[in-house]
Length: 369
Image (cartoon, rainbow, N blue to C red; front, side, top):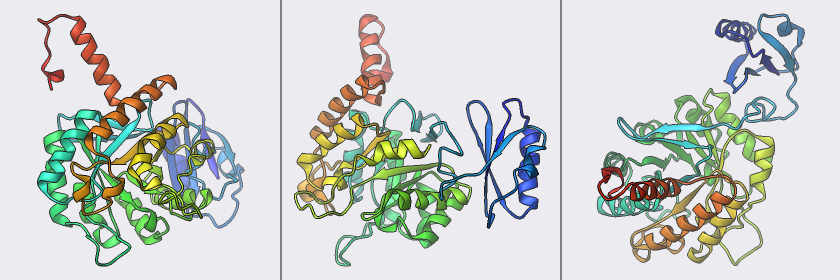
């Protein structure tokens, strides 16, 4: 059930409704909106009586939720959710789900401090605001490179301090989830773990933003239900990620299902980004699919970029060269402008042109690099 509060409802009214829900043995999930607050209820084994709440102060109406996924549904929250991150003291805020596209870029796996710093410098210069790099790597083969573990996480913390990039890195099980959360700004849950329910619940309790990748054989409903596990634990900062599904096609590693973007937008308030690197598995297809993802309404991209892909220890064949990533950013920035969105690259270009117009004597250090 969803309790919709009146626009003029006070914080006390909201607390009273939450207390009533909890006194019944259920869990309350208040979700503030632009006009009014909605309160979702989970844990109830069956339908509740609307009259239990409709007579309370500040309550507009009590509405049954028809979808099996409740908290991720637009029935509970009609406005788009925007996930706000802060990379550290004195650093710029980063948002996922707003007008500016969230661009996450970096190598598949962290191999060394030099490799991470080289990649971070180039993706930051090109306009990325978040850095992706795996310290723990769940691999198909037990003999493949499994990541540097905590040593890699420490290097990622250095990358954040040096370049002001928010860190997105993968957690592979509940046991290492707390460790990863100490270093990461966003916890990534990979496709293989989309239905690892103990991991989803643990990530939900940590209250750290979570990037949830769609499983390679998951339906849309299964994808949204996996997100529901995280929200049901009280963590509402979830970013969905389409990364391709397994089909009979053999010309790409996976089949990137871009049709899921408008479907998610219709059903859920959560932001959704696209991974064209895993979605295709081939370097020459990453940029064209990134363009298409932005055009169809994705809230951002997560792209693999390596300073030396032919020597990469993981997924080098689908990683872009830094020069190719710069070209991708130019193209998606142009497309973003057509559909009323921006990238950090377009913001820098605008600021740079304004600086240039102000004359040579008005140089600003912020744009000199």
